Length: 113
Length: 111
Image 1 (tube, chains in turn blue, brown):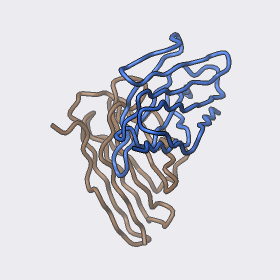
Image 2 (spheres, helix red, strand yellow):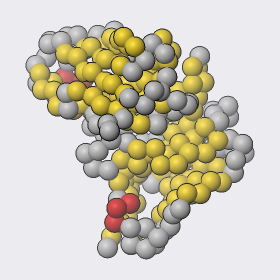
Image 3 (cartoon, rainbow over the protein chains, first blue to last red):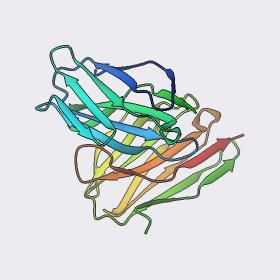
Image 4 (cartoon, rainbow over the protein chains, first blue to last red):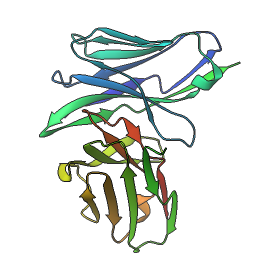
């Protein structure tokens, strides 16, 4: 079945610098890749997503890139701010009857002021 | 305006008891989900319903039984609770292929 690996598990960056989180997936049929942000004690929030027919997508300070050949996708956060501190999850869709998501293990991002 | 709500927020109970968690969404979405987040923060799908029909039923013990009385509600009943059931349970809804909005979570602690 689908396996999603996410790296790094923890990431610490200085405020204002960029952060990059990478995920790889195993199922070449996966066609939808969302990213979620979960602040401490809160619910996961969908922050950006990308479909397999697109190579890059941006939304203000966040962007996601997808390399279908290599089966990896990345989240890029520029000009980081303290409120970006959270756990970030990548996910990849897999169709087994119905479509479902397989999540990565999460990356705890800390922005140092 | 709460998009996805679930009750209770906290649930502390003893092993062997039966408990229920309720979820409601007011977004008009067709699909609802139950996810389990363990102590290591790993998120795993348990069930998914589309228009009251069960479409995803992961390898979950049959002590867990979801019920969707209508497309705005999805409840989770758990029989004979075990220590390993302790986790945060999230309800979610979507109109597309993946959960768009999560509920606030129910932290279940089994003692």
